[in-house]
Length: 394
Ligand SMILES: *[C@@H]1O[C@H](CO)[C@@H](O)[C@H](O)[C@H]1NC(C)=O
Ligand SMILES: *[C@@H]1O[C@H](CO)[C@@H](O)[C@H](O)[C@H]1NC(C)=O
Ligand SMILES: *[C@@H]1O[C@H](CO)[C@@H](O)[C@H](O)[C@H]1NC(C)=O
Ligand SMILES: *[C@@H]1O[C@H](CO)[C@@H](O)[C@H](O)[C@H]1NC(C)=O
Image 1 (cartoon, protein in one colour):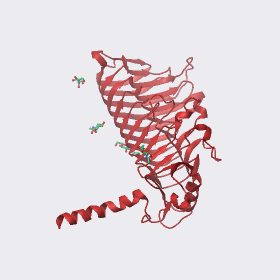
Image 2: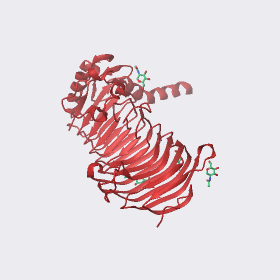
Image 3: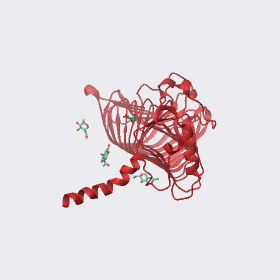
Image 4: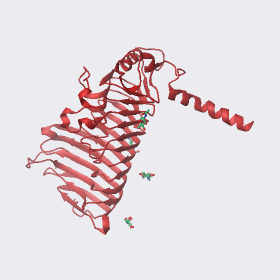
């Protein structure tokens, strides 16, 4: 009896999950793309089914509408835009199955909205995109083109109170996820995967957004795991495994003399594995604006090339005596190994970086080599650092 009861209890608890997985209609207000003619055979173009289901979901007022992409099928779609605002204050997109872009770039038909991406979510508030499925942007056939000619895989534009994940993203032509103009974002339990050699395949790019949290995720690609660009503040990134890739970067900022600002960034509990950088801030000389109140804390390094790097003269050809101000930056509790000699590089231009604090750093070289640190115009303090950062003057 007890066993039977337990079994029933398990079934009872599991049933909404199971049904959600197969897209049964006991989810209230569900819009299943199969009912809109999607084939899910991996090669038929299902774009119209997505768009029609979305149109109905977005104009529904009957509770939170859920667009359902069922499991165990592969849906092929051309570039498309989920356009808001919607009638309902909250919208769900539950992707259990696999969604794939056309396998070769010759077969991509650009979306009329010209957002330069495969899938765009535009001006939708209270959006939840989850379901544990896979978005495969089939980027490989794009990687030989210049970055400007390649699309982002998934773009969130002006989506306030967004939640994304669990979900897997594979092989973007360029960056996997871009978050622009959003206030209140939680990205959790996402896997963003592309080969180490794939160009510009950032995991998440954030710009002009506030209160963005990224947590419990795995990002391995050919560029930054996360890049925090201008107009971003209150960004929290925690419990992320990054690598291979180029690390978690603030910037690059101030290109072509631009005014750029980033502040209140908190990065913690990160494992960088065989990345080219760990904690990085990069700004272009000649720009203006500021980067301030940035903390990197509790960082594990496995064979990282540049574990700590501030570069205020990124790609500078000549000194111009102008740049994006960098201040109030803390690197605390870093441990592990570097594969380069220069573990800590604080390379600031003539305007200097101020209040740079390094504490409890213990980075060893491979094969018993002793790494070192270097500074240019960097000011602040250090304590308990191995290698020592004596160059950090006051
Ligand atoms: C969906 O993609 C995953 C990779 O995330 C893969 O393992 C799985 O086999 C794919 N499913 C189908 C039905 O092809
Ligand atoms: C980010 O995390 C830190 C440490 O947990 C916390 O103090 C801060 O309030 C968080 N930021 C936001 C915007 O919630
Ligand atoms: C440091 O980060 C690791 C994950 O990299 C986590 O397991 C651990 O709990 C964190 N430690 C503290 C004190 O937060
Ligand atoms: C620094 O790390 C090395 C290698 O893991 C370890 O042997 C050493 O005890 C650590 N030093 C401190 C001060 O924690």
